[in-house]
Image (tube, rainbow, N blue to C red):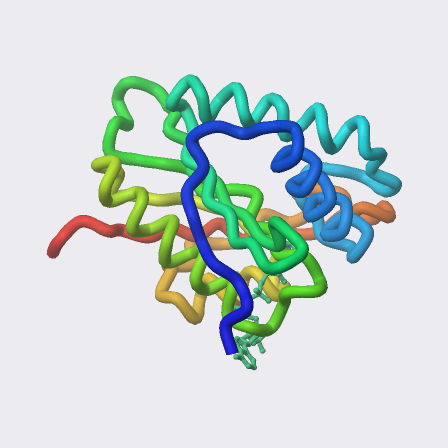
Length: 175
Ligand SMILES: CC(C)(COP(=O)(O)OP(=O)(O)OC[C@H]1O[C@@H](n2cnc3c(N)ncnc32)[C@H](O)[C@@H]1OP(=O)(O)O)[C@@H](O)C(=O)NCCC(=O)NCCS
């Protein structure tokens, strides 16, 4: 049964920033390699989301969230802040689902919503990377993203130790 609803945020208040920080902290605590090392303090997480809020307000980013009765439980972003020779492209990042909401299809729903948003914004080529062989990489392959290849020793896991990343793309242009 679906227990969450999805929406695109165009502005963020402190309450939403706090809830997004909680999701990010939970993912890092759970071992996700999403730019941060453990322990991720609330201050650092809030600072991150304030910067995202600035990007959203500037139109450089699209931010999608899923919320349940407790508040935000999942999120994903599209970055449009790219060189002028890539006006058709967006980078997809910070796909995060709180552990309380996993395994219910929210990740897949956020990805589909991000693809719809990208099309609406005229972006037809999406690129992302994910830890090789992880839950997220499996999700992207299941949804039809094309696997480009692996980069060994790309980033550190939150507890330390290098991991490989896999680059994926998705072409949304009509064939
Ligand atoms: C990767 C991530 C976003 C997936 O989110 P999610 O909401 O659990 O994703 P889904 O529910 O769509 O799919 C997860 C699994 O649940 C299964 N599932 C989906 N709906 C289901 C349902 N109603 N009943 C049972 N299982 C279900 C899916 O088939 C999938 O199975 P698999 O893991 O065996 O492939 C989440 O694990 C996460 O946030 N991880 C940490 C952060 C991270 O690594 N982000 C990626 C950065 S690139």
